[in-house]
Length: 175
Ligand SMILES: CC(C)(COP(=O)(O)OP(=O)(O)OC[C@H]1O[C@@H](n2cnc3c(N)ncnc32)[C@H](O)[C@@H]1OP(=O)(O)O)[C@@H](O)C(=O)NCCC(=O)NCCS
Image (cartoon, rainbow, N blue to C red; front, side, top):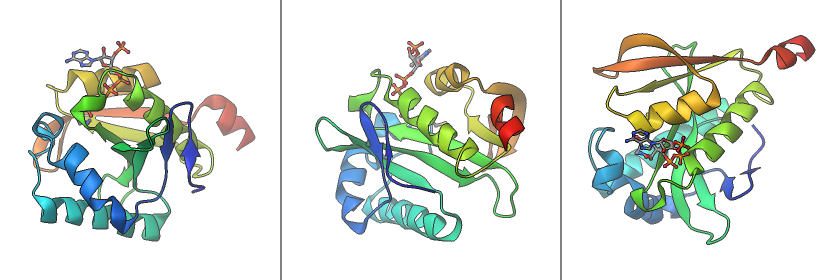
């Protein structure tokens, strides 16, 4: 998948080893941001997440990507795609931002760009998403992107709302 992805206010690029401390300070150690994502991580936990994304990128050409705020040049969160299960076939959208960056439309802006890449260069027929019932902000982001809720699914040890978004008809027609 072609990186970086540049939007009006954000850049999504490939992870680098040097992102570790910013990623940890801004997102993975942030209690509010990690509350519904298994709680804050220690530094080795953040390193493991970063390595998972880098390995995923090498294997499939997509992963979570760091989101950089263009105005400041600072890493403010991550967004991207990951396989819902190791043996496929569903590819899920994900996003998370440090709480200092909430409420600016960044999740919607980044997720919109990720979905465009999924249906464009990656050629996926559908993108899925999961979120906790308590995560009303995330559900609002998915609704704004046009995702449809399909009910509850047991994913990663918890009951989660399961959403799908089909490849737009215009893209289906032109391949
Ligand atoms: C969920 C999250 C990604 C939203 O990021 P964001 O950049 O603030 O999102 P946006 O500004 O693009 O849009 C959020 C929308 O949800 C709404 N919202 C936010 N919190 C809400 C809540 N508690 N209840 C209802 N709506 C809420 C906002 O008003 C906004 O809707 P609007 O544009 O119609 O006003 C962010 O809170 C986050 O990173 N949370 C921690 C990680 C996480 O939960 N990730 C998702 C995992 S599934």
